[in-house]
Length: 177
Image (tube, rainbow, N blue to C red; front, side, top):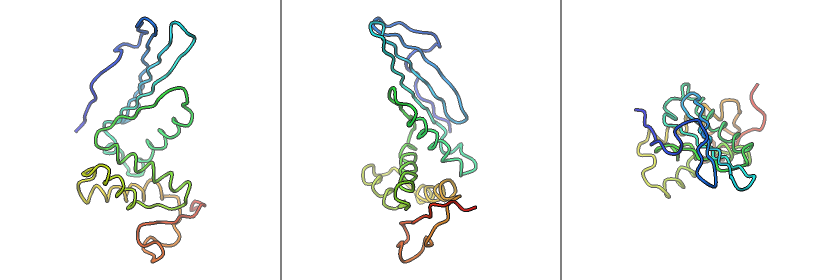
C-alpha cells in the first residue's frame, strides 16, 4: 500500500517571490524515494539556504533484495556529510524508527565494532511503545542487519557465544574476501 504525503510549498519548478525571499523547488525521483530541494534566497541580503526533503513512502517494503535496505541509509548519511548549508528532513510513516535504528546500528559498528540490536530496539520501544508490534517487525531488524550490514564482515566470536550473551556482536574490522 503506497502512502503519499500532502503537497505543500511551491507547485512549479519556477521561482516564487514572497517579498523578502524567493523560493525555488527542485525535485528528483530515484527509485522508491523522492528528493525535493527548496532553495530559499533572500532578496535583501546575498544569502541562500537549501532545505532538502526526502520522501520515502515505500521504504523498506520496496527494498528487494533485503540487503538493499541499507542503500537508503548510506545515501542519507552521505548526503548529511556533504550537505552543510541547511536542514535535511526525511519523511516516512511508521518506518522512521526502523530507519533510525538501522542507521544507529551502522554507526555503532563503525565506532565500537559491536552491534546490540536488542538494546537499541528496547530503548526505541521504551520511548515509543508499539513502534514494532509483532515478532516479525523485530525479526526484520535482525535480518536487515545480517543481510545489509554484516554481509561483508566476519563476526568474532559467534553470535551465540557466552561472551556476547546473544545480543552484542563484536565484529572484525577487515571484510571477508
